[in-house]
Image (tube, rainbow, N blue to C red):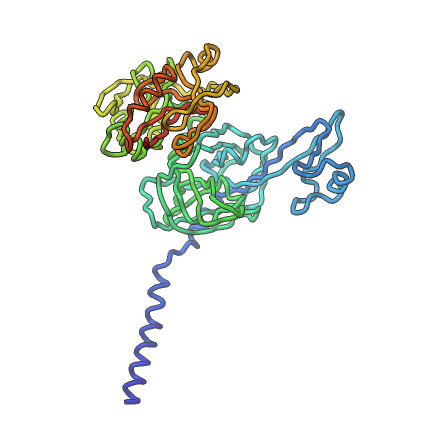
Length: 476
Protein backbone atom coordinates (compact mmCIF):
# COMPACT_ATOMS: atom_id res chain seq x y z
CA UNK A 1 0.00 0.00 0.00
CA UNK A 2 2.84 2.37 0.94
CA UNK A 3 4.76 1.42 -2.22
CA UNK A 4 1.69 2.12 -4.34
CA UNK A 5 1.24 5.57 -2.73
CA UNK A 6 4.94 6.48 -3.22
CA UNK A 7 4.79 5.31 -6.85
CA UNK A 8 1.65 7.35 -7.49
CA UNK A 9 3.13 10.48 -5.85
CA UNK A 10 6.39 10.23 -7.82
CA UNK A 11 4.41 9.84 -11.04
CA UNK A 12 2.42 13.00 -10.24
CA UNK A 13 5.61 14.98 -9.46
CA UNK A 14 7.32 13.72 -12.59
CA UNK A 15 4.30 14.69 -14.73
CA UNK A 16 4.23 18.18 -13.18
CA UNK A 17 7.96 18.76 -13.70
CA UNK A 18 7.90 17.59 -17.31
CA UNK A 19 4.71 19.53 -18.08
CA UNK A 20 6.10 22.93 -16.96
CA UNK A 21 8.71 23.36 -19.73
CA UNK A 22 6.06 22.53 -22.34
CA UNK A 23 3.90 25.43 -21.07
CA UNK A 24 6.87 27.83 -20.92
CA UNK A 25 7.94 26.79 -24.40
CA UNK A 26 4.65 28.04 -25.83
CA UNK A 27 5.23 31.61 -24.57
CA UNK A 28 6.63 34.06 -27.14
CA UNK A 29 10.25 35.16 -26.99
CA UNK A 30 10.70 38.89 -27.65
CA UNK A 31 14.48 39.03 -27.20
CA UNK A 32 15.33 38.85 -30.91
CA UNK A 33 12.67 41.44 -31.73
CA UNK A 34 14.10 43.85 -29.12
CA UNK A 35 17.67 43.40 -30.40
CA UNK A 36 16.84 43.82 -34.08
CA UNK A 37 14.12 46.51 -33.95
CA UNK A 38 15.15 48.52 -30.89
CA UNK A 39 17.82 50.58 -32.75
CA UNK A 40 15.15 51.88 -35.19
CA UNK A 41 13.06 53.36 -32.36
CA UNK A 42 13.86 56.93 -31.31
CA UNK A 43 13.21 59.21 -28.38
CA UNK A 44 11.67 62.58 -29.29
CA UNK A 45 12.05 65.68 -27.10
CA UNK A 46 9.92 68.71 -27.92
CA UNK A 47 10.55 72.28 -26.78
CA UNK A 48 7.86 74.94 -27.12
CA UNK A 49 8.29 78.63 -26.35
CA UNK A 50 5.26 80.41 -24.95
CA UNK A 51 4.73 84.10 -24.30
CA UNK A 52 2.56 85.79 -21.72
CA UNK A 53 1.37 89.35 -21.35
CA UNK A 54 2.44 89.67 -17.76
CA UNK A 55 0.42 86.62 -16.76
CA UNK A 56 1.75 83.69 -14.79
CA UNK A 57 4.14 81.38 -16.69
CA UNK A 58 2.94 78.53 -14.46
CA UNK A 59 -0.58 77.57 -15.63
CA UNK A 60 -2.83 76.45 -12.80
CA UNK A 61 -0.67 78.12 -10.12
CA UNK A 62 -2.03 81.06 -8.04
CA UNK A 63 -1.30 84.45 -9.56
CA UNK A 64 0.65 85.57 -6.52
CA UNK A 65 4.02 87.33 -6.81
CA UNK A 66 5.65 85.48 -3.89
CA UNK A 67 4.44 82.05 -5.08
CA UNK A 68 5.60 82.76 -8.64
CA UNK A 69 9.05 83.78 -7.36
CA UNK A 70 9.26 80.53 -5.35
CA UNK A 71 8.56 78.41 -8.43
CA UNK A 72 11.03 80.44 -10.51
CA UNK A 73 13.81 79.62 -8.04
CA UNK A 74 13.00 76.04 -7.14
CA UNK A 75 10.83 74.79 -10.03
CA UNK A 76 7.50 72.98 -9.99
CA UNK A 77 7.47 69.66 -8.07
CA UNK A 78 7.92 66.77 -10.51
CA UNK A 79 9.19 69.05 -13.29
CA UNK A 80 12.87 69.02 -14.35
CA UNK A 81 14.84 72.07 -13.13
CA UNK A 82 14.59 75.00 -15.52
CA UNK A 83 11.47 73.69 -17.27
CA UNK A 84 8.65 76.21 -17.37
CA UNK A 85 11.06 79.10 -16.72
CA UNK A 86 12.18 81.90 -18.96
CA UNK A 87 13.49 85.44 -19.04
CA UNK A 88 11.36 88.46 -18.30
CA UNK A 89 10.49 90.25 -21.54
CA UNK A 90 9.03 93.69 -22.27
CA UNK A 91 5.33 93.61 -21.44
CA UNK A 92 5.35 89.95 -20.43
CA UNK A 93 7.34 86.76 -20.06
CA UNK A 94 8.78 84.07 -22.29
CA UNK A 95 9.08 80.54 -20.99
CA UNK A 96 9.82 77.10 -22.34
CA UNK A 97 7.85 73.91 -21.93
CA UNK A 98 9.15 70.44 -22.73
CA UNK A 99 7.47 67.15 -23.53
CA UNK A 100 8.56 63.70 -24.63
CA UNK A 101 7.41 61.16 -27.16
CA UNK A 102 8.60 58.30 -29.34
CA UNK A 103 9.00 57.61 -33.04
CA UNK A 104 10.56 55.13 -35.45
CA UNK A 105 12.76 55.38 -38.52
CA UNK A 106 11.10 54.32 -41.79
CA UNK A 107 13.96 55.12 -44.19
CA UNK A 108 17.74 55.01 -43.93
CA UNK A 109 18.01 58.69 -44.92
CA UNK A 110 16.24 59.87 -41.75
CA UNK A 111 12.44 59.96 -42.23
CA UNK A 112 10.67 59.23 -38.94
CA UNK A 113 7.01 58.56 -38.13
CA UNK A 114 5.43 59.76 -34.89
CA UNK A 115 2.12 61.21 -33.63
CA UNK A 116 0.90 64.64 -34.68
CA UNK A 117 0.10 65.47 -31.06
CA UNK A 118 3.73 64.76 -30.09
CA UNK A 119 5.15 67.52 -32.35
CA UNK A 120 2.14 69.84 -32.30
CA UNK A 121 3.19 73.49 -31.79
CA UNK A 122 6.83 72.49 -31.30
CA UNK A 123 9.51 75.16 -31.71
CA UNK A 124 12.29 72.59 -31.58
CA UNK A 125 12.23 68.83 -32.10
CA UNK A 126 15.23 66.84 -30.87
CA UNK A 127 15.62 63.19 -31.87
CA UNK A 128 17.80 60.87 -29.82
CA UNK A 129 18.86 57.53 -31.30
CA UNK A 130 19.53 54.34 -29.38
CA UNK A 131 23.30 54.89 -29.87
CA UNK A 132 22.90 58.23 -27.98
CA UNK A 133 23.40 60.43 -31.06
CA UNK A 134 21.13 63.48 -31.15
CA UNK A 135 19.74 65.37 -34.14
CA UNK A 136 17.48 68.37 -34.63
CA UNK A 137 14.51 67.29 -36.70
CA UNK A 138 12.45 69.14 -39.30
CA UNK A 139 8.68 68.64 -39.30
CA UNK A 140 7.71 67.63 -42.84
CA UNK A 141 4.00 67.65 -42.05
CA UNK A 142 1.35 66.54 -39.58
CA UNK A 143 -2.24 65.39 -39.93
CA UNK A 144 -4.35 65.99 -36.83
CA UNK A 145 -7.30 63.95 -38.13
CA UNK A 146 -5.29 60.72 -38.07
CA UNK A 147 -2.70 61.91 -35.50
CA UNK A 148 0.20 61.07 -37.82
CA UNK A 149 3.31 63.23 -38.33
CA UNK A 150 6.39 62.86 -40.51
CA UNK A 151 9.72 64.36 -39.38
CA UNK A 152 13.23 64.25 -40.88
CA UNK A 153 16.76 64.23 -39.51
CA UNK A 154 19.92 64.76 -41.56
CA UNK A 155 21.62 61.37 -41.31
CA UNK A 156 22.34 58.34 -43.47
CA UNK A 157 22.63 54.55 -43.20
CA UNK A 158 20.22 54.52 -40.28
CA UNK A 159 18.52 51.34 -39.01
CA UNK A 160 14.89 51.22 -40.16
CA UNK A 161 11.83 49.19 -39.31
CA UNK A 162 10.14 46.60 -41.50
CA UNK A 163 6.54 47.52 -42.32
CA UNK A 164 3.95 44.75 -41.92
CA UNK A 165 0.30 44.29 -42.90
CA UNK A 166 -2.12 45.17 -40.06
CA UNK A 167 -4.98 43.53 -41.97
CA UNK A 168 -3.50 40.10 -41.20
CA UNK A 169 -3.56 40.74 -37.44
CA UNK A 170 -5.86 38.50 -35.44
CA UNK A 171 -7.55 39.19 -32.13
CA UNK A 172 -5.56 37.36 -29.45
CA UNK A 173 -2.28 37.63 -31.37
CA UNK A 174 0.84 38.68 -29.43
CA UNK A 175 2.21 42.18 -30.11
CA UNK A 176 4.91 44.35 -28.53
CA UNK A 177 5.60 48.08 -28.20
CA UNK A 178 8.92 49.89 -27.91
CA UNK A 179 9.06 53.50 -26.75
CA UNK A 180 9.99 55.94 -24.01
CA UNK A 181 7.28 55.83 -21.32
CA UNK A 182 7.91 58.64 -18.82
CA UNK A 183 11.21 59.27 -20.63
CA UNK A 184 12.59 55.76 -20.04
CA UNK A 185 14.16 55.13 -23.45
CA UNK A 186 13.84 51.88 -25.42
CA UNK A 187 11.35 50.28 -23.06
CA UNK A 188 9.58 47.19 -24.40
CA UNK A 189 6.13 46.07 -23.28
CA UNK A 190 4.02 43.22 -24.64
CA UNK A 191 0.42 42.02 -24.78
CA UNK A 192 -2.23 40.84 -27.20
CA UNK A 193 -4.54 42.37 -29.80
CA UNK A 194 -7.82 43.01 -27.97
CA UNK A 195 -9.91 44.23 -30.93
CA UNK A 196 -9.57 45.53 -34.50
CA UNK A 197 -11.27 48.34 -36.40
CA UNK A 198 -12.18 50.13 -33.18
CA UNK A 199 -13.91 53.48 -33.71
CA UNK A 200 -13.30 56.17 -31.10
CA UNK A 201 -15.25 59.42 -30.54
CA UNK A 202 -14.09 62.21 -32.87
CA UNK A 203 -11.69 59.79 -34.58
CA UNK A 204 -13.62 58.88 -37.72
CA UNK A 205 -10.71 58.29 -40.08
CA UNK A 206 -8.80 55.63 -38.14
CA UNK A 207 -9.83 51.98 -37.57
CA UNK A 208 -7.79 51.63 -34.36
CA UNK A 209 -6.04 48.46 -33.21
CA UNK A 210 -6.92 47.94 -29.54
CA UNK A 211 -4.39 46.08 -27.37
CA UNK A 212 -3.68 45.47 -23.70
CA UNK A 213 0.01 46.38 -24.18
CA UNK A 214 1.19 48.71 -21.39
CA UNK A 215 1.30 52.15 -23.04
CA UNK A 216 2.08 55.23 -20.95
CA UNK A 217 2.84 58.94 -21.52
CA UNK A 218 6.00 59.03 -23.64
CA UNK A 219 5.04 55.94 -25.67
CA UNK A 220 3.04 58.11 -28.07
CA UNK A 221 4.35 57.81 -31.62
CA UNK A 222 6.24 54.58 -30.96
CA UNK A 223 5.82 51.39 -33.01
CA UNK A 224 3.62 48.36 -32.36
CA UNK A 225 5.28 45.14 -33.61
CA UNK A 226 3.96 41.69 -34.44
CA UNK A 227 6.02 38.61 -33.56
CA UNK A 228 7.71 38.69 -36.98
CA UNK A 229 9.30 42.01 -36.02
CA UNK A 230 7.12 44.02 -38.43
CA UNK A 231 5.54 47.34 -37.51
CA UNK A 232 1.76 47.04 -37.64
CA UNK A 233 0.77 50.26 -35.88
CA UNK A 234 1.68 53.55 -34.20
CA UNK A 235 0.81 53.75 -30.50
CA UNK A 236 -1.45 56.77 -30.21
CA UNK A 237 -3.94 56.78 -27.33
CA UNK A 238 -4.78 55.13 -24.04
CA UNK A 239 -7.92 54.99 -21.94
CA UNK A 240 -6.97 55.82 -18.39
CA UNK A 241 -8.47 57.27 -15.23
CA UNK A 242 -5.08 57.51 -13.53
CA UNK A 243 -2.93 58.82 -16.38
CA UNK A 244 -1.12 55.48 -16.66
CA UNK A 245 -1.81 52.18 -18.40
CA UNK A 246 -5.10 50.42 -17.67
CA UNK A 247 -4.80 47.82 -20.41
CA UNK A 248 -6.73 49.82 -23.02
CA UNK A 249 -4.32 51.05 -25.69
CA UNK A 250 -5.09 52.18 -29.24
CA UNK A 251 -2.75 52.13 -32.23
CA UNK A 252 -3.07 53.62 -35.72
CA UNK A 253 -2.74 50.86 -38.37
CA UNK A 254 0.57 51.29 -40.18
CA UNK A 255 -1.02 51.21 -43.66
CA UNK A 256 -3.06 54.31 -42.72
CA UNK A 257 0.08 56.00 -41.37
CA UNK A 258 2.21 55.16 -44.42
CA UNK A 259 -0.45 56.55 -46.77
CA UNK A 260 -0.53 59.78 -44.74
CA UNK A 261 3.28 60.01 -44.64
CA UNK A 262 3.53 59.54 -48.41
CA UNK A 263 1.10 62.41 -48.98
CA UNK A 264 2.90 64.63 -46.48
CA UNK A 265 6.25 63.88 -48.13
CA UNK A 266 4.95 64.55 -51.64
CA UNK A 267 2.59 67.50 -51.03
CA UNK A 268 3.03 68.66 -47.44
CA UNK A 269 -0.73 68.22 -46.93
CA UNK A 270 -3.46 65.58 -46.95
CA UNK A 271 -6.19 65.32 -49.58
CA UNK A 272 -9.37 63.49 -48.59
CA UNK A 273 -12.67 62.72 -50.21
CA UNK A 274 -15.66 64.62 -48.83
CA UNK A 275 -19.44 64.36 -49.15
CA UNK A 276 -20.69 67.25 -47.03
CA UNK A 277 -22.98 65.23 -44.76
CA UNK A 278 -23.46 64.61 -41.06
CA UNK A 279 -23.98 60.97 -40.07
CA UNK A 280 -24.86 59.01 -36.98
CA UNK A 281 -25.20 55.42 -35.85
CA UNK A 282 -28.43 53.67 -36.81
CA UNK A 283 -29.90 52.37 -33.55
CA UNK A 284 -32.64 49.79 -33.24
CA UNK A 285 -35.17 52.52 -32.36
CA UNK A 286 -34.19 54.68 -35.34
CA UNK A 287 -34.29 51.67 -37.68
CA UNK A 288 -37.82 50.96 -36.46
CA UNK A 289 -38.90 54.56 -37.09
CA UNK A 290 -37.56 54.36 -40.67
CA UNK A 291 -39.23 51.00 -41.31
CA UNK A 292 -35.97 49.04 -41.53
CA UNK A 293 -35.45 45.43 -40.43
CA UNK A 294 -31.81 45.82 -39.33
CA UNK A 295 -29.33 48.48 -38.19
CA UNK A 296 -26.83 48.12 -41.04
CA UNK A 297 -25.69 51.38 -42.64
CA UNK A 298 -24.86 54.99 -41.84
CA UNK A 299 -27.78 57.32 -41.14
CA UNK A 300 -27.56 60.70 -42.90
CA UNK A 301 -28.51 63.28 -40.27
CA UNK A 302 -27.78 66.36 -42.37
CA UNK A 303 -26.74 67.40 -45.89
CA UNK A 304 -24.74 70.55 -46.57
CA UNK A 305 -26.46 72.74 -49.12
CA UNK A 306 -24.54 72.81 -52.40
CA UNK A 307 -22.13 70.09 -51.25
CA UNK A 308 -21.26 66.91 -53.18
CA UNK A 309 -23.93 64.83 -51.42
CA UNK A 310 -26.61 67.49 -52.03
CA UNK A 311 -25.72 67.63 -55.73
CA UNK A 312 -25.77 63.82 -55.88
CA UNK A 313 -29.30 63.62 -54.47
CA UNK A 314 -28.62 62.43 -50.91
CA UNK A 315 -31.15 63.53 -48.31
CA UNK A 316 -31.38 63.64 -44.53
CA UNK A 317 -32.99 60.38 -43.40
CA UNK A 318 -31.24 58.28 -46.05
CA UNK A 319 -29.36 55.24 -44.76
CA UNK A 320 -26.20 54.60 -46.78
CA UNK A 321 -25.65 50.86 -47.12
CA UNK A 322 -22.99 50.82 -49.86
CA UNK A 323 -20.42 53.35 -51.04
CA UNK A 324 -18.34 52.71 -54.15
CA UNK A 325 -19.46 49.05 -53.99
CA UNK A 326 -18.11 48.72 -50.43
CA UNK A 327 -20.64 47.63 -47.78
CA UNK A 328 -21.29 50.14 -44.98
CA UNK A 329 -22.25 48.18 -41.87
CA UNK A 330 -21.80 50.93 -39.27
CA UNK A 331 -21.58 54.73 -39.39
CA UNK A 332 -17.84 54.57 -38.59
CA UNK A 333 -17.20 52.67 -41.85
CA UNK A 334 -18.30 55.58 -44.06
CA UNK A 335 -15.76 58.34 -43.21
CA UNK A 336 -12.84 55.96 -43.79
CA UNK A 337 -14.14 54.84 -47.19
CA UNK A 338 -15.07 58.36 -48.32
CA UNK A 339 -11.83 59.86 -46.99
CA UNK A 340 -9.72 57.40 -48.97
CA UNK A 341 -11.63 58.14 -52.20
CA UNK A 342 -9.90 60.46 -54.67
CA UNK A 343 -11.70 63.82 -54.97
CA UNK A 344 -13.48 64.20 -58.30
CA UNK A 345 -14.29 60.50 -58.62
CA UNK A 346 -17.93 59.64 -59.35
CA UNK A 347 -19.02 56.69 -57.21
CA UNK A 348 -22.21 54.62 -56.90
CA UNK A 349 -24.03 55.00 -53.58
CA UNK A 350 -26.82 52.70 -52.38
CA UNK A 351 -29.28 54.03 -49.80
CA UNK A 352 -32.50 53.05 -48.06
CA UNK A 353 -35.00 55.92 -48.37
CA UNK A 354 -38.38 55.65 -46.68
CA UNK A 355 -38.01 51.89 -46.53
CA UNK A 356 -37.09 51.42 -50.21
CA UNK A 357 -33.68 50.85 -51.82
CA UNK A 358 -32.39 53.59 -54.09
CA UNK A 359 -29.24 53.88 -56.23
CA UNK A 360 -27.44 57.23 -56.61
CA UNK A 361 -24.23 58.50 -58.14
CA UNK A 362 -22.16 61.08 -56.24
CA UNK A 363 -19.10 63.01 -57.39
CA UNK A 364 -16.80 63.08 -54.35
CA UNK A 365 -15.46 66.51 -53.35
CA UNK A 366 -12.27 67.49 -51.52
CA UNK A 367 -12.51 67.89 -47.77
CA UNK A 368 -12.13 71.56 -46.75
CA UNK A 369 -9.21 72.36 -44.48
CA UNK A 370 -11.34 74.45 -42.15
CA UNK A 371 -14.98 73.35 -41.98
CA UNK A 372 -17.42 76.25 -42.04
CA UNK A 373 -18.94 77.25 -38.75
CA UNK A 374 -22.68 76.99 -38.22
CA UNK A 375 -24.04 78.94 -35.30
CA UNK A 376 -27.27 77.96 -33.59
CA UNK A 377 -29.37 80.78 -32.14
CA UNK A 378 -30.33 80.47 -28.51
CA UNK A 379 -32.16 83.68 -27.65
CA UNK A 380 -34.69 84.07 -24.87
CA UNK A 381 -38.24 83.93 -26.27
CA UNK A 382 -41.72 84.24 -24.80
CA UNK A 383 -43.17 81.23 -23.01
CA UNK A 384 -45.34 78.88 -25.09
CA UNK A 385 -47.13 75.58 -24.46
CA UNK A 386 -45.36 72.22 -24.53
CA UNK A 387 -46.55 69.64 -27.06
CA UNK A 388 -47.34 65.95 -26.61
CA UNK A 389 -43.70 64.87 -26.18
CA UNK A 390 -42.69 67.79 -23.93
CA UNK A 391 -41.21 70.23 -26.46
CA UNK A 392 -41.95 73.95 -26.38
CA UNK A 393 -41.07 75.29 -29.83
CA UNK A 394 -40.83 78.59 -31.72
CA UNK A 395 -40.34 79.23 -35.42
CA UNK A 396 -37.01 80.74 -36.49
CA UNK A 397 -36.74 84.38 -37.48
CA UNK A 398 -35.53 85.26 -41.03
CA UNK A 399 -32.13 86.23 -39.56
CA UNK A 400 -31.84 82.88 -37.78
CA UNK A 401 -32.82 81.01 -40.96
CA UNK A 402 -30.12 82.92 -42.86
CA UNK A 403 -27.49 81.60 -40.44
CA UNK A 404 -28.76 78.09 -41.21
CA UNK A 405 -28.48 78.56 -45.01
CA UNK A 406 -32.21 79.15 -45.38
CA UNK A 407 -33.27 75.94 -43.59
CA UNK A 408 -36.65 75.78 -41.90
CA UNK A 409 -36.48 74.83 -38.26
CA UNK A 410 -38.09 75.17 -34.86
CA UNK A 411 -36.13 76.49 -31.90
CA UNK A 412 -36.47 74.43 -28.71
CA UNK A 413 -37.38 76.88 -25.93
CA UNK A 414 -37.96 74.18 -23.34
CA UNK A 415 -37.55 70.40 -23.29
CA UNK A 416 -39.36 68.28 -20.73
CA UNK A 417 -40.97 64.84 -20.44
CA UNK A 418 -40.03 62.13 -22.89
CA UNK A 419 -38.27 64.62 -25.21
CA UNK A 420 -35.86 65.60 -22.43
CA UNK A 421 -35.38 61.96 -21.45
CA UNK A 422 -34.46 61.18 -25.07
CA UNK A 423 -31.77 63.89 -25.02
CA UNK A 424 -33.31 66.91 -26.77
CA UNK A 425 -32.08 70.12 -25.11
CA UNK A 426 -33.02 73.76 -24.90
CA UNK A 427 -31.32 75.62 -27.78
CA UNK A 428 -31.55 72.69 -30.20
CA UNK A 429 -33.20 73.36 -33.55
CA UNK A 430 -35.75 70.76 -34.69
CA UNK A 431 -35.37 70.32 -38.47
CA UNK A 432 -37.79 67.49 -39.11
CA UNK A 433 -39.87 64.53 -38.00
CA UNK A 434 -38.89 61.23 -39.65
CA UNK A 435 -38.54 62.29 -43.31
CA UNK A 436 -40.76 65.38 -43.13
CA UNK A 437 -39.39 68.93 -42.81
CA UNK A 438 -40.57 71.02 -39.84
CA UNK A 439 -41.99 74.18 -41.41
CA UNK A 440 -44.18 75.41 -38.56
CA UNK A 441 -44.93 74.68 -34.90
CA UNK A 442 -48.57 73.88 -35.70
CA UNK A 443 -47.66 71.38 -38.42
CA UNK A 444 -45.05 69.68 -36.21
CA UNK A 445 -47.48 69.37 -33.29
CA UNK A 446 -50.18 67.96 -35.60
CA UNK A 447 -47.71 65.36 -36.88
CA UNK A 448 -46.75 64.40 -33.31
CA UNK A 449 -50.39 64.20 -32.20
CA UNK A 450 -51.10 61.81 -35.09
CA UNK A 451 -48.45 59.33 -33.92
CA UNK A 452 -50.08 56.42 -32.02
CA UNK A 453 -48.89 55.58 -28.51
CA UNK A 454 -46.02 53.06 -28.50
CA UNK A 455 -44.72 54.15 -31.90
CA UNK A 456 -41.12 55.41 -32.23
CA UNK A 457 -40.40 58.55 -34.24
CA UNK A 458 -37.08 60.10 -35.26
CA UNK A 459 -36.65 63.82 -34.57
CA UNK A 460 -33.94 65.51 -36.67
CA UNK A 461 -32.10 68.03 -34.49
CA UNK A 462 -29.41 70.63 -35.17
CA UNK A 463 -27.07 71.14 -32.19
CA UNK A 464 -24.18 73.52 -32.67
CA UNK A 465 -22.50 72.40 -35.91
CA UNK A 466 -23.94 68.88 -35.85
CA UNK A 467 -27.22 67.34 -36.91
CA UNK A 468 -28.49 64.10 -35.41
CA UNK A 469 -31.62 61.98 -35.23
CA UNK A 470 -33.07 61.47 -31.76
CA UNK A 471 -35.46 58.48 -31.41
CA UNK A 472 -38.49 59.11 -29.20
CA UNK A 473 -41.10 56.52 -28.24
CA UNK A 474 -44.43 58.33 -28.03
CA UNK A 475 -46.53 57.63 -24.93
CA UNK A 476 -50.13 58.48 -24.12
